[in-house]
Image 1 (tube, rainbow, N blue to C red):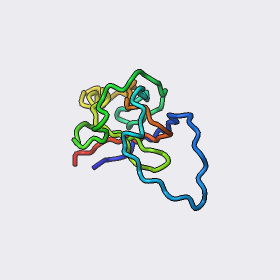
Image 2 (image 1 turned 60 degrees about the vertical axis):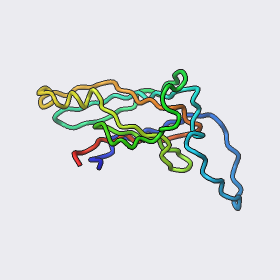
Image 3 (image 1 turned 45 degrees about the vertical axis):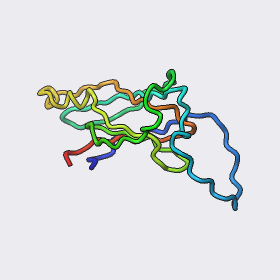
Image 4 (image 1 turned 120 degrees about the vertical axis):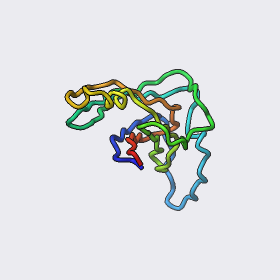
Length: 146
């Protein structure tokens, strides 16, 4: 389904400390995904999307706190299979996907122009999602035709 994984950003979205786990402590049940977020804030991850005839690359720019999350608080996992690109927010402690979205980017549109075959360009792009309750990884993927 995905031609390749373009990038994985590590984002430490919380400074909260957690208590150490005892060696024989019972495993806590998995919390609902919505509990993995603080909906009073939004995390914006900015990056540079560069490419042309020689290939495509991404470079992290910044992680920025924004105002309250204005998107859905219940439909956190995207099942629409739409958009040339797709990103997942993965909880670092459980390795579970807690948010995902498909999207189209300005770079993806630029790939359809004649200039793409002869020039390299850089576009500044952003991913936005509710503020995670703990550290997360972001996987940004590009879909193939299948």
